[in-house]
Length: 460
Image (tube, rainbow, N blue to C red; front, side, top):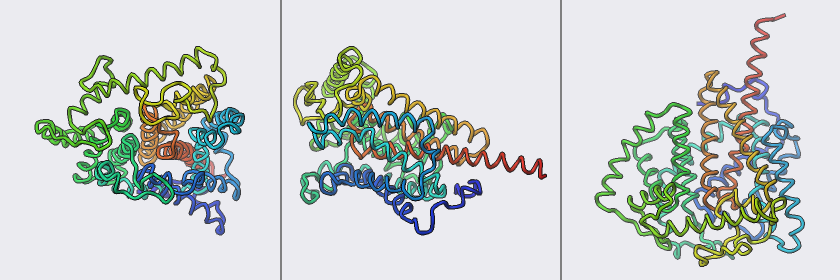
């Protein structure tokens, strides 16, 4: 299974000079970086000495790839790229006035948008050498195989062994520090890869992956949606309902046994346990406004809604309509929401990337944010439609994977502080850029085919 045989002849000609292997090394390093975030979470994110952490180092190193050879203009003139560039300009404008006041915090808060540079970098690397798509697919298959078997074990173990796991030198962050939403996004990606037939799936792998999904779904409602919604969307787009149905038949007996035996896994340092009734409570609390059987779920839901309503009041209906509060200020402290019920560790941003953008950049920023996402979805939808219509099944499945995995990131970031950090933020923008790169590469393939047909029809 390879893209190489489907690529147009010009694309197969490597544009990178033989001495420019830096781009190949960087591409491999970025893939490894995304995998490290998935396996260790915040642990890997804080490896290094502030402010030079892996995400920032990779961002600076990625910008070097724009120097030689110079990037393709196509990367920057696609509709989602133009809108993203406009959003970046607005972000910079709403950051510069606050650097003197909040210093590094102002720059740190901008990553929710400025990590979008990864999108430009990865799109350019794909267009520069489309055969890198094959490398990414092979490595993703290996990573998702490992992740499917280990997600549940790593997540549960680090909850119990939190005090035993060593810390990074000079840091209070353990080597492994995963949150439920982060695991859910990666587990959802693994499930998508298997459902779409981009890797071989064994029964043991499916069972272990399912256990990982169960664990994080009991801890995170947003994480639950980040797995379920992309899988259903992928099944609709590909017609693979049978595979999804067989998967459900396979896991239902496991769910039944766990339910009747009242199997329970208490999570150290968390207020929730992993049980089937807890899963039901989480699912019901997403849609039902009445009280659930778990008061914790009601408290966190009400706390988020109060904060989001306050953000809407002082932006859409208030004095921060045009500019927002800018980057650098702690929104939790400014808005009076330091934790659920006013207690707990201090936060910086509301549990929603969309609300963060609204609060910091006002309505113009939120408008650009939404427009960027919609333009990207339109680009992906068009490419998926064309690939399915023309019978390019492998292209279609890969594009659908990127689309659905990206949507999983969006869903998780709608209920959690996700894109504000590198654990999900880097993955989100890498998928964004991969979608642009793949779409442009597929357009090049289609143009090459048309040119060949015309040449055959009129050889003179």
